[in-house]
Each structure stands twice: as C-alpha cells, then as structure tokens.
Length: 211
Image (cartoon, rainbow, N blue to C red; front, side, top):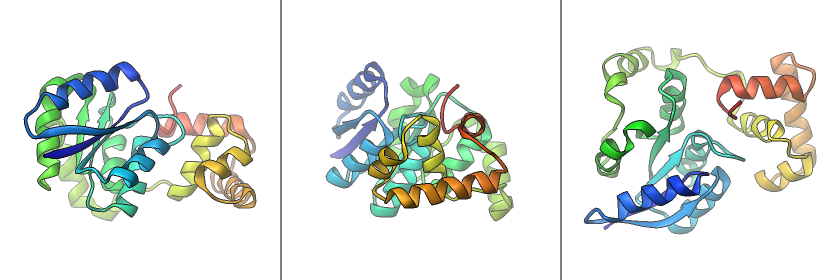
C-alpha cells in the first residue's frame, strides 16, 4: 500500500485529489495539509511514501516544503503539482529534491502514473519539458542560474511578503527574532532593496507568492 500526503491550500482541490488517489488499488491518502509548513509537519509525522505538494501555497511554497521534507525524510518521494510550466519552477523543484512535476491541467491523466513512478524512484516530468528543458538542465548541471538568496532567506522573504511580523516568522521557522532580523537585513543587502514593497515585487517575480 502506497501512503500519500496531499498538500494544497484549496480544499476543493484536495478533495478531488483525494478521491482520485483513494479509488486506486494500492494507494491511500494518510494526511492532508493546507500550506507548506503543515505539509512538512505532516510528512515528519506520517512519513508517507509520496508527498504531493502544490507549488503555490501560503507560508511555505511546495518547493520550499520539498526541500525541508527531503532534508529530514529523504526516503519520502516528492511530487510537485503546479499550474505553471515555466522552466524555473521545474528547475527549482528538481534542485529541491522533487522527483516528479505534474501540471494541474493534466492531473486527471498524469497524477496516478506520476505517484507510481516517483514511489518507484523514477522521475516523472511533463512530456513538454522532457525533451528540452531537462536535457538542458542535466547538461548544464551546476551552471543553472542560482538565486542569490539561500533557501532560508527565501523562506523569510516569502513570509515578509505575506505580511507576517518578525515574531510570527520566528515562530513559523522556529528561530529567534534576532535571526529573522539578520536574514531580513542580509536579503535587502544582497538584492539592493530598501523595503517590504520591493521584497513583495521580488517574491512575485520569483514565484514565492502569487500576484
């Protein structure tokens, strides 16, 4: 039996995905989450075989959650679900440790195959990307453009952009307020920005939050 975690901030989407997964023989949804932070917590609690993570979620994106899950539970196979087929979402997902990437518009056809594939340790990527983007990425390897921010700094930027206070960010990320303030200062210095408005624009461009 494959145990599956579903994470999406839209309840109706989670319900549809749960029905799709649970009606398959040999698959069962063991936990759900409505944001990235909850997804990490549920993954640590249940240690599912596969974690299906929506890319765009509050508090922590699917890519950020994937990175955290793989750091603490490397045996969990991560499958990202996204509305976006731009290459930077795919590359970010691969670099975070995801093994599969399914476009939401094709989920009814691709999701189950993708779950079985990543559970068996095989990558699953949209057909439109396999012949070009992935080969390019594999060929370039470390030459793929990197974000100037560390993963933790990206976590902080997302939460700042979502209007969380330093105290709330510290509680979510389980660090001190002083550490959050330090990250904020480092981010502004690295990006050459002055205030939250500029950080919000950056977060939207980077796909950390939706406009």
